[in-house]
Length: 383
Ligand SMILES: Cc1ncc(COP(=O)(O)O)c(C=O)c1O
Image (cartoon, rainbow, N blue to C red; front, side, top):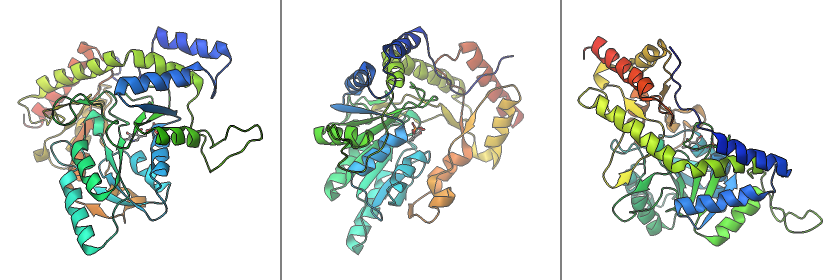
């Protein structure tokens, strides 16, 4: 029996063709046609005015923090239930964090919780966040409309961490037709190997603001001025994407619609199979379309602590890979003293959350093996 991996990249002949073209052109690093082509096509795909290719999603987020002018001691409100890269970008600027729990319906930032805290802080004359970084968790659109409204009221910058959610959209309401990562002041995406499309490693910064886009490009390329004598007008980063990686990105982008459709088909089959069981399926909210980047379930609370690990081990016994959801940020040792709003929802998602195999090329036969094994575990544990 073959191993069923969690989520592996889907790379084919077109990717090899374009990467070979980049290699044989001799332009393998920062210069070459693929970087700008990737940026233009990506911006078109998500509907942003500008896109700047970066070395990683974390780099794109860090640039956003620099452009939000986050200085040591400034406060950044960030989703508590996320992968730590989300807050690392703010920590690189020595920001103080305000960790905001998720709501149980969307698994994303509970914007009401944040609203109440901003009202309290304002009334008490306490520090307010300079930026809000809202994370679209596991392909699920977060409530950006509410966050933008709140941020406008307080004059706060909104950064969307869309690293995990490329292709997710709103289908009705104020953001109907929009893609995640394009509504706030700035957005960031990741093309790490396990993401819905990959460049090996890479990211994208998005914005509708021409000046922010210009500065993002400048900062990502060592803030080097057009001057023959190596003039740098500020401290920049080597955060650019290589031409080879961008060639891979152009080819993957051509196939992105298929990848999104494949992820949704995998999710539908799991949802159908787990309907009526004690397994809690991922959020599917009206007015938005998740990409189910990593299809993740919640094991039943009645099974007690340790049930998630038991199921993971049970799957591993037959060579099925699965992965625990993240420990929320407030449980990470370097962040344990950061102010926290709520926290119980994220802790519960962490305690019971498990991502199941969901590669875009997952066969129905392999998916059935996963489903049957989960059903078997449920039966062994009381149905
Ligand atoms: C929510 C979130 N933010 C940021 C990142 C960082 O992206 P990268 O790995 O490309 O730096 C990731 C993924 O890796 C992520 O899941």
